[in-house]
Length: 149
Image 1 (cartoon, helix red, strand yellow):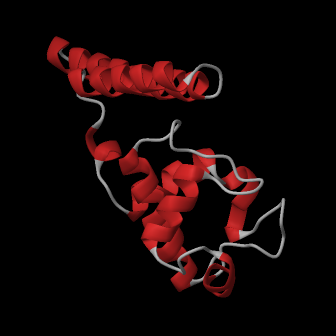
Image 2 (cartoon, helix red, strand yellow):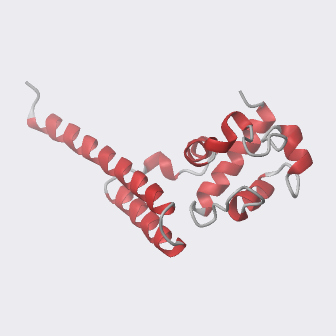
Image 3 (cartoon, helix red, strand yellow):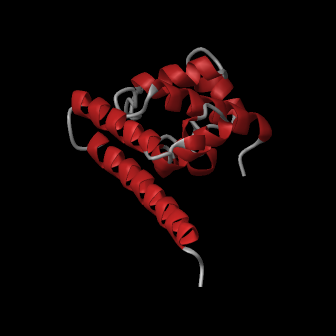
């Protein structure tokens, strides 16, 4: 039988993971159902809770891998595999970004589009943090350069 410290460590890790998942789900649900001010407060509370319980870790890193996670959770419904289900010619492929993205194929242009939205694309400036948007931009440009699967 395992000793008590081992059981307690397992319990704490399991609880931290549940708190992180709950905080993320709650913040996402709130982002699509209440005004921007409440979204910011809920997001800050979720991050503060995750940090307090030691569960945020890698999720707060600003990078392409984090951008992929944010993309999959928020963008893939319309842009899975770098495509565009609403306007099929305006994909996230390298050539289409060069042709259609205001400002050209660069992270700052993606940040502008994601933050403010354009045409059928909604603005994510009130739903995602600046860091999350920068991560998504890094992921989109990196993946477009490498080629979407």
